[in-house]
Image 1 (cartoon, rainbow, N blue to C red):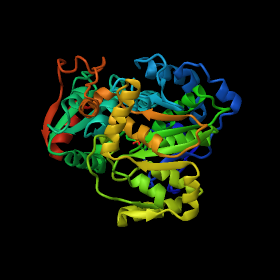
Image 2: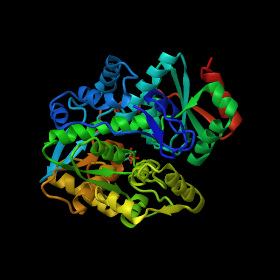
Image 3: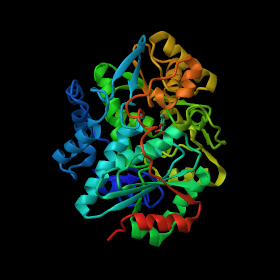
Length: 466
Ligand SMILES: *Cc1c(COP(=O)(O)O)cnc(C)c1O
């Protein structure tokens, strides 16, 4: 299996190199040159398999034999072993033909664990094979940092440094990061804002000598392997509800377009997907783009579903590449216009093709609260605000009533207790990974927002590449 860049001017790579490279040198995102397909028999045969075994069958063609199949199987078993539900990604019915796909049973109680738990192990495996180490660095305003830390902790070939703005992440978010005591995990509280943290990370990547000495890397959402890992639960959920003989619709709370793009990838592999409903909060660049064809940046405004408060959706570039029939120059032109002019237009014909599969709708804050309340009143379940955006969009968008609709539940209600309590008067019970967090010891280094101070710290605590 070869991977090419959406911008069309980077060499094709095999799976391992695409994994380790992340962003292509021409600024593009990697995609498989051709989609592997799942036949109807192969889909039917997934029914009833444990999640990790289904994942192995779905993922293997993307790896193209570069990683030994048994080693892959062992990594998958290990990645999903600690999920706190025997089905890993269970389905729960909440209305006639409407289901929740619970993706929050992983160690940090959000769906990003599905991709990152595997990504950390894949990174470590390839590094071990190559006799190399990396230093993963990243900035977080809350949730991504803890999922990345839990993915990299105790991996022998990885050091991870996560910068967060001191005093500006919630106590639970901070403690999910700082109570991880693995010796390769380093939390840095920057005396500054999230923007300062991001600027520091960017400066470190732009410092060629530092980047080389420390072998810097990221686990951000544009890495192909994250999309790949997320394809699995679309397939297993659809098979549980009757695929390949019955088509299903997915409603996906969307920020960077990574998760819903994995649903698109599943449909390209042959999964019968009737519709993909892109659910956004009031930061609705994607809903606007898919409705009008104008992809135009607007400001970000904070909501109850902060993981979807985005200005641009980086993974949308992967869909554009397909809509433009693999024309890297056309993708480059759109992305250049995005940087220079804050937007671009999608031509009518490619837009029509996108709309043949995608629906999109924004859900405002009142509708989000109302949906949390409705699901609680009708089923007794407490859902988080991100999930509520997806469920509300599923109900709002007219669709084929014969196709079951699966709304992705992307975070546990206990991660957003204030919003849940506001909507329902009930405070969600604290599940195991959060219980005990308030008493556990924290490990964190506070530093000024000063590039030299941060680099000195990382040099002294990390393990420079030999
Ligand atoms: C990251 C995140 C999303 C958005 O996913 P994308 O892949 O960025 O579209 C939705 N819900 C939660 C809880 C998240 O953490």
